[in-house]
Image 1 (cartoon, rainbow, N blue to C red):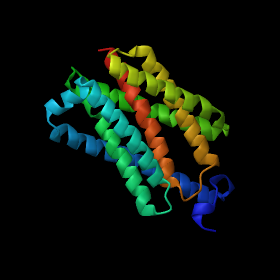
Image 2: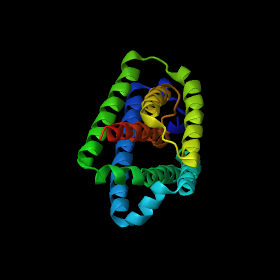
Image 3: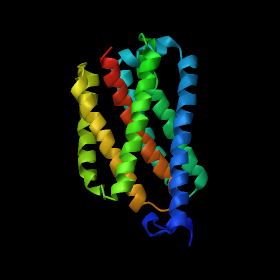
Length: 229
């Protein structure tokens, strides 16, 4: 049977192991690619433009809209039947994540001990991601019940972010804490879906979903650590 029509939960042990290996390798590749692209942007993009991204509310709203539209396109491509288009989708998503992270990483890196803060956020993110992944695989629990809370929480968060950009108010520490919880729930949900619902040929799309949740987690852990400085 073609790998694209075998549900992971119905595959044999070897097929599941290959699927999981490919999925998490692609997550690692996406993270490494993000680091390379982000490093290039931090060196190539003029500081004035980065500061405009931070200071102009309409520019930031445009970036949010671009991120939303790009995410839709990237997800559509990542689940295409064409393997080449799947990689295009993952590449697009890595690029738009690098763009949206540019101002916050710039701010973090110009702070005193900024590099250490970024490193701490990355380590915490990876440990949380590993722990949440282990919870799904070790407990064998179905976390699909989290979907409604994630969707509702995502729309509420987006509304607050847009309102904050328009009216210029700071969402504060507790919003970041709530978003860490939302990102953690998303990792539990996506990992559960990967284990039970995806097809064995959808490892690129699965990797994109996990990468998106990891980056959301990293963003708000970084914001929390930055707020302490």
